[in-house]
Amino acid sequence: MKITETKLKGCFIIEPKVFNDERGYFFESFNKDQFNKAIGQKVNFVQDNQSFSKKGVVRALHYQVGKHAQAKLVRVLQGKVLDVAVDLRKDSKTFGQHIAMELSAENKKQLFIPRGFAHGFITLSETSEFFYKCDNYYNKEAEGGIIYNDPRINIDWALDEAELLLSPKDMELPELKNARL
Image (cartoon, rainbow, N blue to C red; front, side):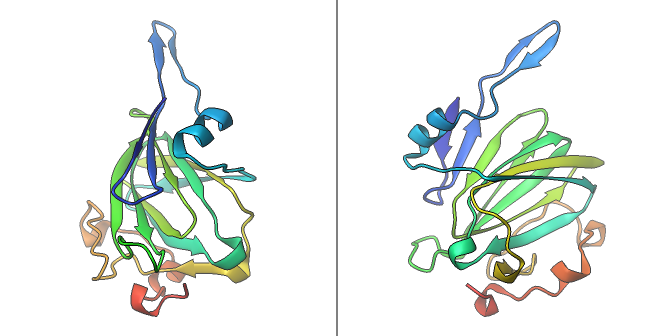
């Protein structure tokens, strides 16, 4: 397993060692001891979530606040997405900055997003199945979000605006400057 820290401190790209042969492939998608050692902290995942999306679906930018904040380990089981993490840690040198990377069933990369970040993705393939582990349980009262097209964050979602599909709820999220942090 190869683990690389991104420009956003605490946010890591995980690349598993994949064993391919004529039958297909095998890889270890998660090993708690190796993972915790590599990122230098103990993370205890307690909830797994999975979503299915059509091309152009944007699920973003979401987070949990306070004692309900969540770290996430995300990956794509089928298809391809552009995955985005935005640093919301007010004391961070990279506050308001983001990273965007392609996650796919083909490349098998994963992204670890620590607490204090907003997260979102857009499906680039015809469909995608997205899987994520969370280190805290979801709490509706602790929901937070930032509008996907916040000009300060300036995310390139890789598709034309006319191709994007968002929920009514995600279309009404505030900009970062007015977000509940």
